[in-house]
Amino acid sequence: MTVLLRNTFKAWIDRAPGAPPKLVMVGDVRVPTDGWQARLTRRSPQGINPKILILDVNTQQPGGEPQEAITTIPLRYEESPPQDEYGQVMIANGKAEIVVRVCGSN
Image (cartoon, rainbow, N blue to C red):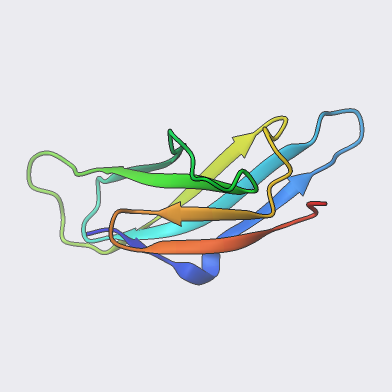
């Protein structure tokens, strides 16, 4: 079972000089054993509000006999340039959802 670590999720617009604006989303998930893989993917289709980007946490369980050790996996999603002026990002894993405000958005 994947657990979203609520306080680790952050989103911002990176407006570094000389590069197009980039939306960056980071956060961590906790999984029950080692060997898991996790990533953030853009949901398709998106929701009805174009100012809220929806990302899904996709996980893959390890094969074989994984070691029983609670593991934290860092996640990162980037979109350059952002497809809209997002104000929020919703992260979902099928059991829970977290909504974070995008810092640096208009």
